[in-house]
Length: 601
Image 1 (spheres, rainbow, N blue to C red):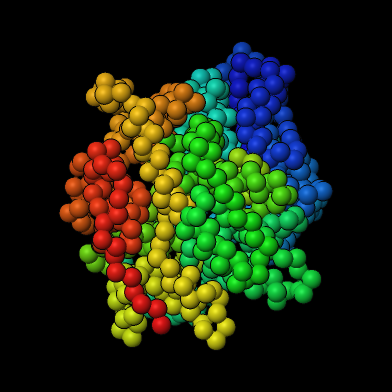
Image 2 (image 1 turned 60 degrees about the vertical axis):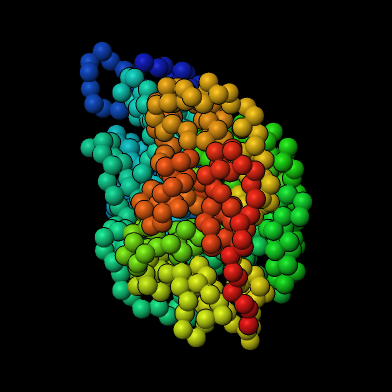
């Protein structure tokens, strides 16, 4: 993981001022790449004559060295140094591109990102469609004085674009690098590229499933599903530095860990034991489940604990690194950032993680309420389209806060192409004939695909464990304590006048008010405010899914919803007995009658 910054056409700056400004802005994202700083400056003395020709460019790269640590420093260049690249990400098909005789190039490094240059020289603005990976990158083409930027298919890697008062265009991995130099900035849309030749965003990622109104009908093959996922994990194991897996003990991270361990065992008896990491409050559900999985897989496990006070003390820093005021993202990212710091202290620089499964497979507990397969599929598509506002942002920026790179197999292009073209009927939370004892558990097809008793991937009780959102799984008292603290901080007058202070995305809970206040201190202004997606949500749903259930609509109307999985009464095993009362602060959190758990074989 790295940090990139590019400034194009700073008309009122001298060359020395341009360099100083680029260094100053890039330093704000150095946590993403603490290993080295690279800089490219192109500058011509400006005349009084008004011209569209770009005469000043600054490109900075803050490097986290994972592939080719010795020679892969950036920016990277073509042979005559007229094409300059600053990239953040990993290109998993780089070896295939390097060996393609139809894409000749004199490579100077073993960096996976270097292949972007010959692809650009051969395919121009269509180059991004030839990449398999996660990325945000910027190219300066000195030959025609143009620049080009692109972001990966889902937005796994963060990227922002900004506009200066002097007409200059800027790009950065995080908005904090643009906040002081741009008049306006926004998120760079996933699956798009931007060219200075027309100054427009154009979509390069156009799978059929991206249209929520196109309902797929492909039949399910369990073996194929398993093979697609295994391939997604394996391709992400490329690294020249120590790496590990994030292991919460839930289905998604446990499957990622299992596949990685199996592949390592096949590759070599000398492969070092894979590190696994988990975090939670003392006695949390995730810590116990992760220990069980780690023992089963034989990983070198690190189970970290934190206190509620540790988390509360970190909230302001968390919001600064995340650049969001979304409640669920902050709740989940706080223990994740604490864990990232400990991971980096051990010497690990890359981890595999389980983000994306719940969006692609309908794994959140509210999917139990989906009325039919059409609504189910539309929701999965809309969740994936907006994932860069939430879980992609959380995973990337939480780990990057301390120079650790997360990789997410569930968001692999090929894997998504398969699962998103399945008939959504097979993904729905319902009782299956022949598997009645499993109940209507979420992500059934993924569990079933890896249910191989003769050579088990996971302990059965983990493979069939109910979905637990990360912010819940670290310990229920974490969310309850955050909510209680906010109740004691926000005065009645502040709460009564919240819409006057925050007319856009007005907080619907006092916890949300606290986060919004901290965010505004770090990032004042409309551009920063508008970079966060608002709207009501229940258990991480989109606003559209609230219409599925009367209790959801009541929550949304009363308190704007609640994103803890415990808001799904009758499904979550420890659901709140009165969600609106708890979220509004009128009641202390207690559990309703537990949902009936399916019996195991």
